[in-house]
Length: 580
Image 1 (cartoon, helix red, strand yellow):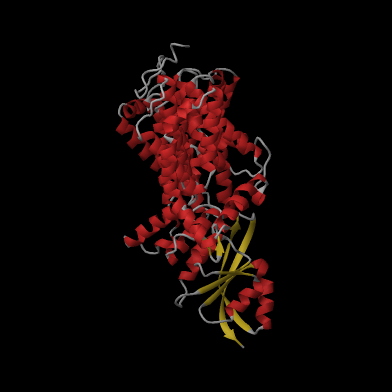
Image 2 (cartoon, rainbow, N blue to C red; image 1 turned 180 degrees about the vertical axis):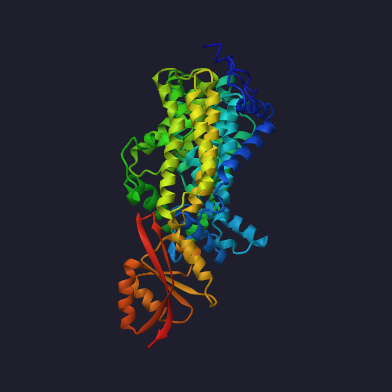
């Protein structure tokens, strides 16, 4: 074992003593790519685009978080106020300003280039998430180079690139993909500083490069999502320091200058929002949002163990390989590389399992470490050959289950089988089947690559075709499209019974969210006004209209499904004909 784990000089490309025999085909392509650093980077960028672009442009806003972020950014662009964060007239102080600035930059750039209606194109608000996802894949590759060979680093990047959870976050205009980028950047720099100390043992400070990356990444993470990034970094450092019985290597982080640099980056906006809103932001973000997650916030409570169960779906197709690697990784936990990566994963995972509020994306910043650990075990031929290998059937099960559910959903909601998705679905099933059938401990890499191909075809099928075809799930764009066809200028809108954030984003910041009687009153106050009344509010609307003598007609009716509330809806668009 000592020979297998022998370490080359830090910074050199590292290869396992016993070469892995991955077979031909896909593995030969990886051979070519991994021969050069530039090829590896370009390859991961191209693969990332292939994974993340299907559906990126044509999937409508996904309620509820995505349009909340996008609408707050849109209001920044409309008002020119890039300090305050609001959703209509309500302050939105749950997260700092970082993601809003990035989204605003994308929208303003598109507008300056002449793109029409840029402010209501949701894909523009997703651009930072796309950049964050691809950047996180590249930084996973960069981080992995401190632990495995260049070939292994490419495989670790592919595991992140193909993971279900990152594929979702890359398509949502939220904070989590960009937060992942900052966490991996900070942890990659921290890993290099820690491992260099482990290998040479002296306390000389390294060049400014890794401390600069570390402290800049911390600043970025804080501006994106507050102190969460400090938890990942702090728990890792604390765990390693306890296990090593030494924290002297932290001097290499140049903490005094680094902390000053971080404060220079984050303090201006925090000072500006304090001057604008007093302590309201800190009360809402820390007390109202972060600390409230210790309870079951917004009905997202779940028992401990939930993230472990979700892992097998959200980290697919890397999850089966991680399961096979787990016994060997635990046996080798005293190795410095393994110790650092486990310190990255386990303490934060335990915290998330204990916190009552649980959402799948919370553990996303831990997945790069799991990917690197899995490849580390693969390169050293330490994957389990016990009964755990039966779990490789999961490579086939996920595409099979997903595609059955997708076909049922499309037929139920649209009465169409979406035949265009079927060839991609068949390719995903075949690739998943090969990954399962061809697995053995000597050809695990070949199975992983087949599983990655299955994920690629699944992404094209589900995101690129099926989800975009499920128009009944997205009534807000249909409403906005109907309002664009009206014959008056500057229509004003009130909504009763359907108050999803996507409606405000698509129909305008001034959209009034009210009840049935309020919509009737609104309609009677002028011309070029429209009331969007969900069927459950129509009776109250009609009663109030009768009471005030309002005459109205139905411009159109839009039927759909509100998946946020889990119920069918029917929205009538009423237009006033005056009063009698």
